[in-house]
Length: 259
Image (cartoon, rainbow, N blue to C red; front, side, top):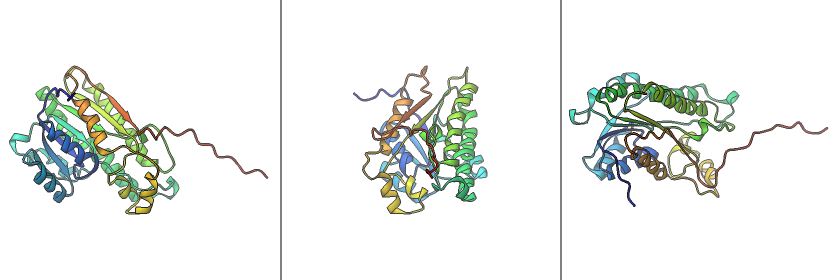
């Protein structure tokens, strides 16, 4: 049975050029939304517009650039300036080295995109939602924000921020009709996530998913669609999803070798 969408309108999806963001753009357009597809790679966004039509508005932006985010609304046509749904999807994971071997520039980039970028985009759009008395913010987190694993260090910490930021936004929005949610996916294949993380090491990417049936980007898009389709009085605070082949890891123990 198809979902009965509570309402549609204008959505802004960051990181829309690939992965979850692309899947979300396709899903939202298919369900009657106009989508501002935002990302750094304009050519990818224009391809989406060419395929999906005028319901997609390409917006080239780097969310880690505060000046670009500050001018976001001024770059939109008047018909799209009132954003009803913000999906903070842009994010990056870099490296799996232990913290003592990690690159400072990788840590800085993850913080700039996953933390500062998400917060700045939210800050740019949230006041308008509250003023208009409608809106929904969906943040894309990760199970890494709750479950630690070797090499996650700053990436996992940024996703813990996404979860806690969502909860604190919910507290601040109490008494308004604006909703806020977080979606936390587990292992997902068919996106650029691991290619970026391992800096194009295709063999390492392939080994990550060998023998598994991981989530697909569309699984996450469908979870978001269900979340935003609930009646206006229902706020789905958090959805966490993993493939059946994945479970939270047990606590690790290092044992000294016997003499």
